[in-house]
Structure formats: C-alpha cells, structure tokens
Amino acid sequence: MESIKIRSQGKWYWRVDYLGWSLACAIAWAVIWILLATLASTNTVHTMGYIFVGWVIGWGMASLARVVYPAPRSTLLTRERRDPVSGGYPRA
Image (cartoon, rainbow, N blue to C red):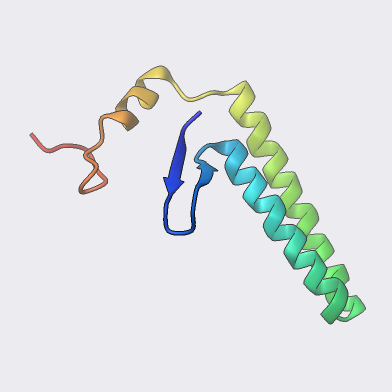
C-alpha cells in the first residue's frame, strides 16, 4: 500500500491505488446526490439516477476485470522503471 504525505494542510495520507480511487468516487457521488436532493428537480434527479447506475455498472465491471485479469508482471515492473521527470520511459 502506497501513500503520499501532503504537508500543506497537516498530515493527510491518501491511498494511490484502486481502493483510494473508489473511496474518492464514493465521496464525490455522495456530494452530487446531496446537491441534487436539495437543489434539483425530479426530472434531473431521475436522469442522474440513470447516469449513476451506468457508472456503478462500469465501476463493477472494472473491479471484476481487475480481479479476473490482473496486469501482467512485466507491465507492473515496467511502470516502476519510468522516468519520473518526463513521465515516460527512459530514452536510450
């Protein structure tokens, strides 16, 4: 488990993996639903409901794919060898 320490606002630790991304998405959707419940019309809420269901299906399929088809070991090793300055692979 990797974490990044952000010192600008004290000691915050953020997970930079799939679980951290999923938690951030859950928080974002919670804020969206709170705003929709207080400010939006019924038609808008229903439309966003369809969008949310589509997003949940996509998230579920991506989660399933990560379990069933994990990345090849060579791909995972290559990611660690990228050049941190340019964000790409080192040039020969």
